[in-house]
Image (cartoon, rainbow over all chains, first blue to last red; front, top):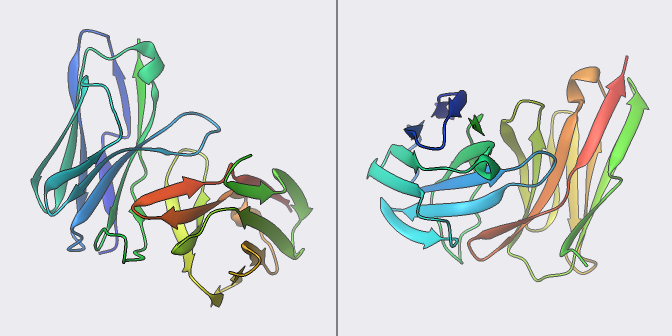
Length: 116
Length: 107
């Protein structure tokens, strides 16, 4: 199994809603990532988890709250989002993370989020 | 100046043509990735290179570390190859992304 599965594929939410995005992989990868991608732009790194611990937060607003309940799952909890947060949210995983490693990234298909 | 420059930005070709997409970078890197993104989202990692050349099916990727340049070639292109091709370089934990090349292959 070389897949990263993201749910839901599409999400529409209001600015007062609370929702969660889910990401799952069963490749035994110990590094998982959240990226945000606006239309016609490259993905921007949001968070990195390594061995279920948050290792990198790229100054993401607190209305985005990541969670890694176990080595296969990564969630992104959303609360009080703004319309400018509408984007494609991509999850990725790799075997390891680190300066000395060159690990291939495996991406999910993304969740297209619209904030009204 | 962007740290990763891709060319061309857009490329339209006929089915069967040989395709080349170029990537130049200005930083010292540990690896270079070529990725493919179809409309609707999902990104597929095609190659990860730190030296030399790699081949997978009709796709070939090369890198010249001294010249800080990489190319992605597609032989016998097919309409299903139509996608955005992205070069990204690995610098520590970060991927620094190029702007992408939008490739359209016409039947």
